Length: 167
Image (tube, rainbow, N blue to C red):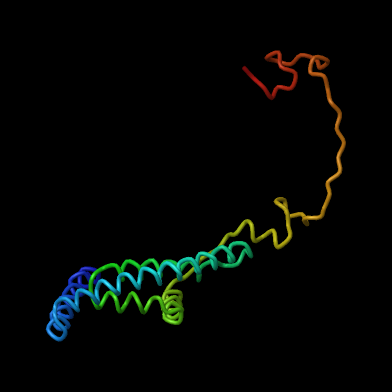
């Protein structure tokens, strides 16, 4: 019900703002402002989106929790959608989401309403400088081997020496 209310309310606000601003400054300046906000907003979204992508990559490389950079990226994406949508109210909200302090506040609001029951991070459990099996990167595993001629082994069921390969 709340979502339906929002989908009805936002267009009504936009229409009222278009009529009011158009009455104050005229049709063409109003349309020019809407077009300019879309162009300026798109360029801001692109630059901030690239910055957040670097933050996400850095967070993943350090095996840190990427929740904040991912949330910022989602809010920048939403900002881009709002800025491309014609309207003054959506432009205001879109530009507001481009301000990092506003995104931090929204993220903290959302995070306070979410309960996380558990987190499992396989790579993080290895720790920094660890290999795939949890060993330190400088550890050496020493071993010996010898080649065995498969024809010298006694036959097994299926006429294959090891039993690993079957026809």
